[in-house]
Image (cartoon, rainbow, N blue to C red; front, side, top):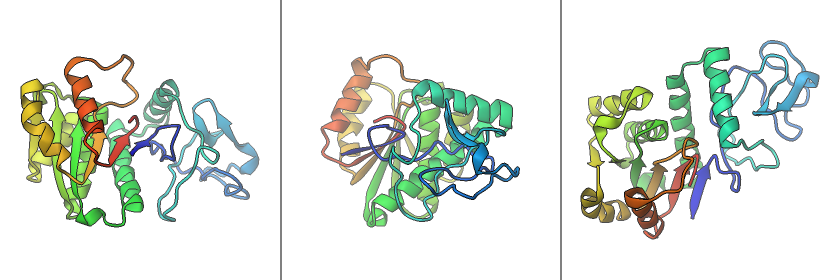
Length: 239
């Protein structure tokens, strides 16, 4: 019921690292070159996923062909590998983290459109955390809103604690008139939990690869209630 975008046990999309390298997977890369001119013989699977062995460039899986790539066709990264891939892309390649967040959110929307032919008819709740995974969710919500979808946005935790790139994308939502509902504690969850469950599709953007401890308390309740809601869930990175 829960589709994990980034979950190794299900069909997934990549985190949208991009620097012009050819797409790998099966025999599709045969005879292709990355934009720096490196041929197929230099393309390899490294410690952090598929890429060009010489220039370390990356390219996301495209949804233009409207099909999924299984774990047999694309390397699935661990949390540590994903963080290292992000670091390399930002520090070594020079692509800003805000760009990665934008690409990730838009690819999630592309995945949703590929999965649900009736997406335009669904009421969608985007449930965001306070970190970068929540920032991805804000991009998802903005993209859906700008395409005319019926979308509601909820933040699990105080809005005042959102920082960095996630704060930037939260502010953009405000600038375009999208209401964001703060669900800061158990009392607020009792008020809004049923409202979220009343949607036709839920986007889980609460936690990403930075989650390293078991859930407890308020957050454990939120996740348990969402899982029990009987509503399809699209989870960004981790379901």
